[in-house]
Length: 331
Image (tube, rainbow, N blue to C red; front, side, top):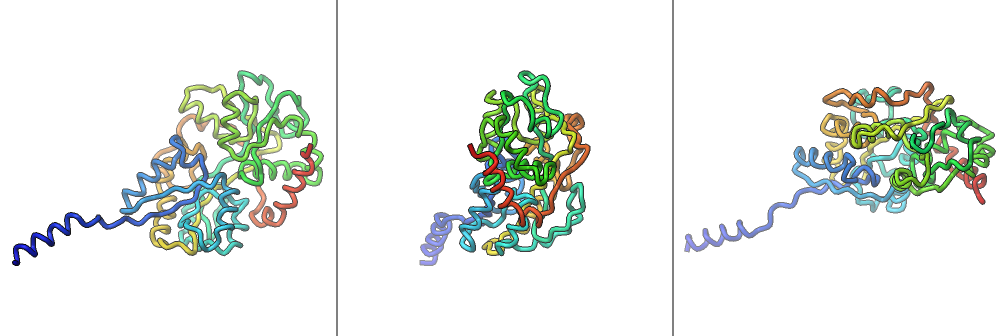
């Protein structure tokens, strides 16, 4: 009888399902988790440290991601949100959906000292007009030249209502033109081929040759040099300066896996994550890396002036400035 029970117990042990791993749900943007993006390598590296499974959810670009979070409210399944930027952080905190990160802000390697107690940065960069040097021999040297230039030479932009690059360009225009931004938008409008919902769609159209210019980053040419061995695509240096973007990660207050989420955010600042930023997300790392930047980064446009609104300024004015853009570009 004893042998029978022992055998039965052994059989049950063998056939019982393995203990399910915890799943960490991370909301992020499309290009982050693309095959060529940092997502796959970040997932692999973190899963080796946590005995867990990382599940990416991509609602679209970052503005669309925040809109989804607001719709889901406390019912959101997100544990971590990765890819908002400082233009959205004040609005994000106001939702009440985010928890304080509890990390040492001195870990952040950003151009200006980091002080945010809700979000930590994982990368930063500078917006730029990227152009095809094979089809455009005389690119604009300033935002003003872009606005007043040849309308037959088109640019592809992103929608500020759904895309952080789109919002970044809108803020760049506002920083440079101030109260005259609406007039500048009207002048630029004939040069705009299309306004894509996000960066991925816009850049794909650009590399297919739909237009000689696209709104992207000063770091974008590094991708083409390193991954494609071509210097065909270049960033134009603008006399007025370039608008900076800092992308961040945050913890969801209502997460069912808060300890795991906090571990991921701490991991985000370390080489296991940060090493993937320069040559997979094609931005500057905002945390500790195990190696210097590739030599191709030394050849990038270096802004003579950094333009940036505070998160509170953007929160107070974003809707009005978007309305201004809509009215000025309406056909």
